Image 1: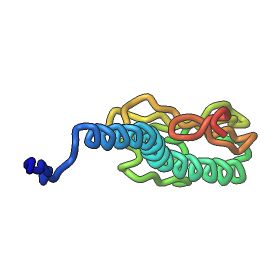
Image 2: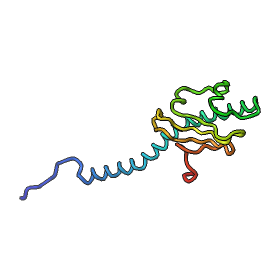
Image 3: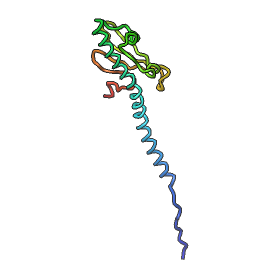
Image 4: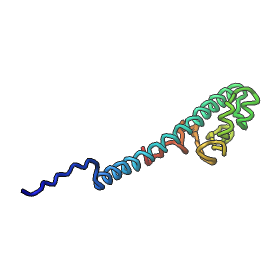
Length: 140
């Protein structure tokens, strides 16, 4: 009688391991860009909230003085606006246009974890935000 060769090794073959690695790589390639967009949106939401507060302060200033303020600093000096110190370290804000203000811009500083130079823009006429961390018109 011939000896019977039975295989009692347990484990995974190289092909099985490679298939799993490829599947994990595909999932990572899909999920990493989505995660990065989510993080950028979260960082931009701080600027959006502050820009909304600036816009409300501009409207109150306009009601009191009949004209728009010249800068965000003027709103703070006149006590129409109080901004969080952490936000001020990470973002700088500018009023664009004068009587009427057409846009409010937030630009990230070097203190922001996402880097400096990212712009969030609020268009007063349309009431829309554009820029960093926000979906563009092509993505919608």
